[in-house]
Image (cartoon, rainbow, N blue to C red; front, side, top):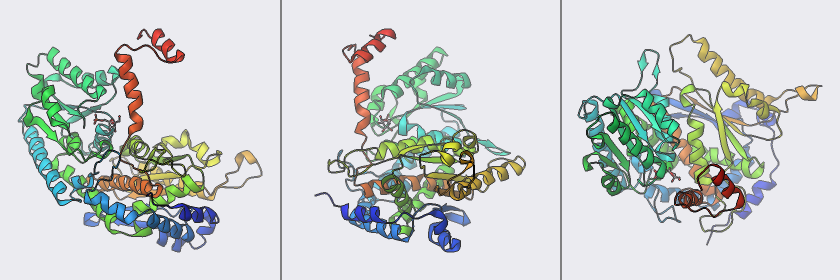
Length: 511
Ligand code: F6P
């Protein structure tokens, strides 16, 4: 029977709504309670500052009681033990095993796959596939967003250092414009192809892969399949498609698509950064895994963030949450989080199939600071929607330009959180800022493979914690299937739909 959390929700709903300025009456105590530095290796760390949210002692107590009633401790243990937590599909969710934290057999299997992947990456770097200057990585959703984000964040040519060992182009869209752009930047003679698909059936990916093969062939490459690496949980399908077994990098079926950056889907990241940095990214994520697995209550950072997420969604009616990376290297983070959070928790039924008892995932949106300030922040400061905001920034800059750039960037980031909270009265209503608007700040010492890994793992666990508090299964995604099925019908020549769809098909010459 479903665990009932009604009493805990009712209690939370009955609590008085605190104001941020009152919560900051004793600022030092507020910081002590809700701004925490998370330590990585060798003095590196990340500050998670949730003090500018409306969580007060009573709400934290209430959410801890909710977590207990939702069986959070047992569900978290089930996740790390490799139990069937994806109940609708009868699967475990073993992304943490990829980082070395999980069921011993799964950790060992992941380690074996990684050893093979490392050997292949290093062999290619040494020239085993001839000169490889470019890598076209085709994949979509979880098979593209993580790799694109990680390469963009960690392999930029910043200042005198950095830059990718191989020029990576992640192509996801079936729209040929995406692939054409990659072709324009790559020399077929020195390009290899990574086909990334958990299922190895996704139409966009397989069509794009065929087109890369055709492009290579047209350029006179005698054996284009000899330049392909397959990243998949369906190795048989990859072999059937034409990839030699020696270049198929498998991963476990129990790793979900949107949680797969850590598996062989991360191949382009390892190609761009080199294996040691990829391994550091895994270790950074593992440090967050251990924190999430071993820390109780509000001290658990992803769980604390989920308390705030639930507060805003269920107690304050917020329908969206925004993420602004004040760092150009993390510009793709909102896109990545959109899939992670919305595909995981955009559900209307509980794990047991009953209707949910409140709203589930808010719409995740965001952008990059300071650009977004000059575009969408008007609504955050004075609009009628209450939008909880996460700001993400790095103390160390990613460039060698004059320090003034980074000082202005960070000043703006911190100013926005302060302004949202403080507001400013005015006799002129158009010029008044209501204030009392929440934000959280994640401040990295530096964007490194380890801090990046920890940042992404933090969001995975935050998503899981939210799902547990709402009683839903974050690991299936049946909502994506219907549209795919209808697209297939159209491809197969079916023309009988509603009048609007029929007319659109006819006008586009598809019917
Ligand atoms: O359609 C959604 C989805 O299944 C995502 O969950 C997944 O990340 C993406 O498609 C790609 O799937 P695959 O890796 O199997 O090609």
